[in-house]
Length: 410
Image (cartoon, rainbow, N blue to C red; front, side, top):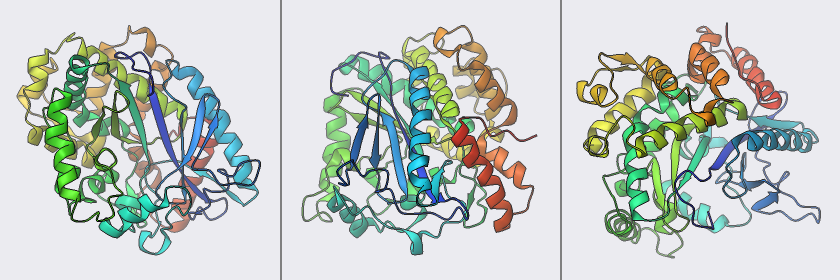
């Protein structure tokens, strides 16, 4: 975010999609096709008015995002819908198309990973040299990133504390990565499982996914970025990787652009679902920042280890996770143990009168009534993980993306 914005003045939204074969749904590493300009040159990022398209680490993933901060999620949804159609038209010439969800259900990363070979490739090759990127945690995971602005240390402190406090419950709303290697992984959000472990060689990079209790730019620099710089030095002998790129906490402070980036949201089937989730998460964070029913002191009182454990519980069980900790329940003004799905229904009811949610409430109610996308996928598969059945279900999901509609399972 180039101009310094105050809390909740705008959103930055990034969506990552797979490119797959139209017939087989196998991955197709051809992201350079939609990223080729009118002069035949391949660009790492192409601006399209309100949105931009860009490459990612691997060549079968394309990112679509707001071109800078926007205050209008409804307009952004409409533009993303147009962009998806435009990209699919381009890819159709290669018999390919976009596919959503946070993980490809049968990709073999060790054999099929192809790193981006164009602009900024030296960065990706440095990552590959240090961490080895031919694994699910690197080359087979797609997410929605939510960037929320802050102006100064006071705003950062409030925003960081609020996000840290609520983020363990996010996978109970957003899980969409239940199948890898052609089978149920035992996790509804397996992407987060790998997210935590893929840089374990240098633990400071990810920490406990849930960030530490930090309230100032100076404190963050000292406890996160300076430690990352020291830890990466023996591995990055060419001095290519910057600490701000390496920080992989689930909510990352970007002081260079005055924003916190939430990275633990699995991408959904279509923009209508993603932006409804962005609206709900943001409205909840806004309520917490304003201390409308949880005080700042209570929010910041929870240990990182505890919040991490809840996060991994919701990653495993999604909406079926049972929240039982009395202190955490009491903080939310909930009297008894509650499922992850019921938690979000409770939150939506609490926030029902918010103007910014009016457009999205019917969509959110539909999603909550059916469970997370991961739960819907498992229900639709009905125990049959054959390639044919997986192709059938994920073809329906590709159609949901193309039409910008929810994937619903009766």
